[in-house]
Image (cartoon, rainbow over the protein chains, first blue to last red):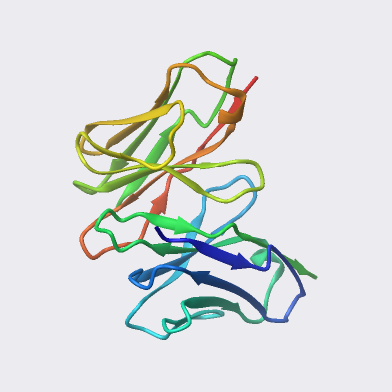
Length: 113
Length: 113
């Protein structure tokens, strides 16, 4: 089955700097890679996703890149703000017809004002 | 638009007691439904998923069970809770087909004492 590894587990940046979170996956058949943001005590919120037929996707200050050959994908947040502080999860959809999504362990991002 | 509900929001139960958590989705039909558990400060563990009424796939052998008695209703149950069942239980849905995005409910915070 699919396995997703996420690094780093904790990331601290200064406000205005960029933050990068990296994930690797094991199943080359996986074809959908979402990213979720979870604030303390709240539900995970889908913030951006990418499909395997695309190499990069941007949405304002957030971008995701995918390298299918290397089986890794990354989340890039530019011009970070204190409200970006949260836990971020990457995930990969197992392409088994059952829509199983496997999550990484999460990255706790701290943006210092 | 689609809405997902979970209840109760919080629950404190003694060890050995039964459990029933409910999740309902509005505004869509035949969704894929998922139960996840999140231990404190940890990632998301997929417990069960369902692609249709009466169709349940279990990911982790344990003392929990799931049922889908109606198209947009998903129930998580236990006959006897363990201390290790404490956590944040999240229900999620997706439309299925080639639409992979999963959306989470508000969650139930369960404390087993």
